[in-house]
Image (tube, rainbow, N blue to C red; front, top):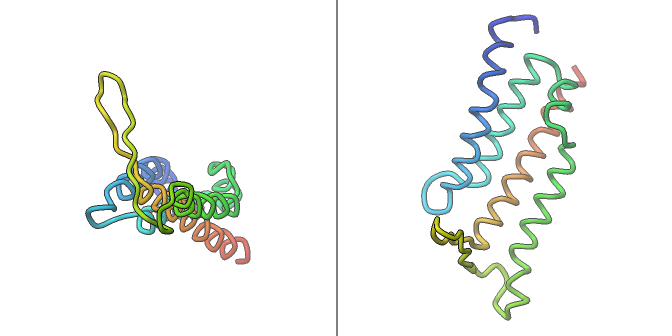
Length: 138
């Protein structure tokens, strides 16, 4: 596509859409959002970039193959469930760990967050694989 307006706006929108996708990911445990919606939002930013500049340029900007995102996401989601076995808990039990940040206080991380990160990466990778394949065919 040769629209100067679209190309300019996509350059500005991509970082905003990626930040919003991370916001949706982190917000999703207790409120609407989560890994699925966040992954779709991240993919939509690259879909717009792909429409404006082509899929080859979008793949170059992504810097990682979408199939690698899928594999990494599945690994993270699986690891979040399997970590409970090492602690003699049922599969996919929500476990929370407190991490000290020094003078900033304590941060609570849990296996549900890691599962959501896995879903986020998997959905992002699957959606981008589909979008790139459809654009490259046409």
